[in-house]
Image 1: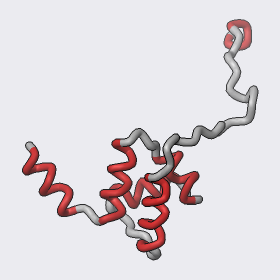
Image 2 (image 1 turned 90 degrees about the vertical axis):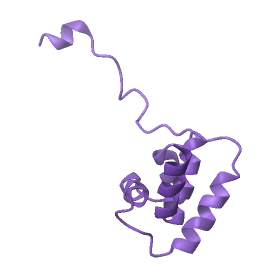
Image 3 (image 1 turned 30 degrees about the vertical axis):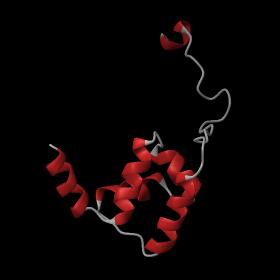
Image 4 (image 1 turned 180 degrees about the horizontal axis):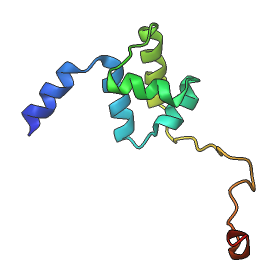
Length: 93
């Protein structure tokens, strides 16, 4: 099992390896995208290996900086009050 894991890592590019290691440390793609000022879709493509960043050295440097952050930042993604519970009488209308 360990040999298979090592073989998988050798086939991955450095950006994929760094994203995977940050996800092991409980970083989400959304939080990484916020820190890198990229879209989540972009990070998904980098992680899957579908795309490779044109500025890979700077992306790796930013991922190194993100790795040093002690606490994963949380960000509200919806306006306050927009995700309210639906009342039972509103469902019947």
